[in-house]
Image (cartoon, rainbow, N blue to C red):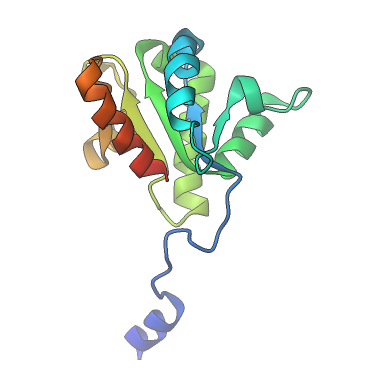
Length: 163
């Protein structure tokens, strides 16, 4: 009886086919990586009409509290992409965005993995905060290749993950 009742109330639900999001992805990055985001990420990922990105310098509402803008951006995005660098790890607001996305995935999206980590720099594991290290060990991430041939494959994988 227990299993019948459980199966009635806990049926498989598709990831988010029925939900519509304003953005495919929110990109969280440190201001030190703004050139990378503006010159490479946006032109490559935002080039076709199917992909819509939320970028804080472009899409946040002026006059609103930054915490409201961050929370709203993450909630309205299918995925959150974190460009991980040393300056990202040192930034209060970048880590706030990371933690809000982590909480969104746990509490609002039934533990669905909405975080997509891109390691733009080589960082030793001992330099990661414990919550991020746990996520890196348990979930997938991708390293930015920094070469022309690897970049094409890299961007295709990113598009696949957030589409």
